[in-house]
Image (spheres, rainbow, N blue to C red):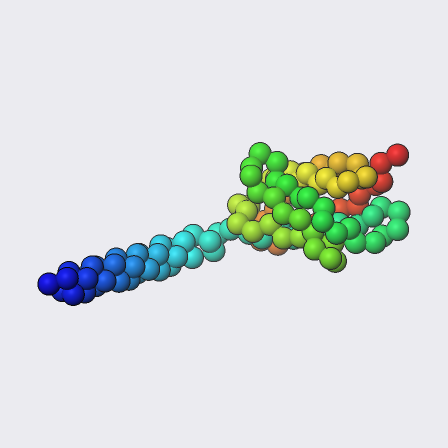
Length: 119
């Protein structure tokens, strides 16, 4: 009797896990359709004087929780933006904070930002 109950419990757990994965797949497919209207914004951040790429600069989209950091080449990407005006705020240790307002659309989605060292 214990074996039968154990087998039923295992079947129930496995069935629940399968049902959860199936519903997740459906949600992902629905999200893919809405993502086609969203834009990715990318850019590079460099030192104003030397022109060298700055690694680890925080790039935040003002008014949202969206933020990212530059990679080893000073490059960053922020995904899932709606077309329109946005304000980027960059901050980095020993550099002045910089704000840049952009008009983002499917044709214009790249930016180059130069940071100046604080004195």
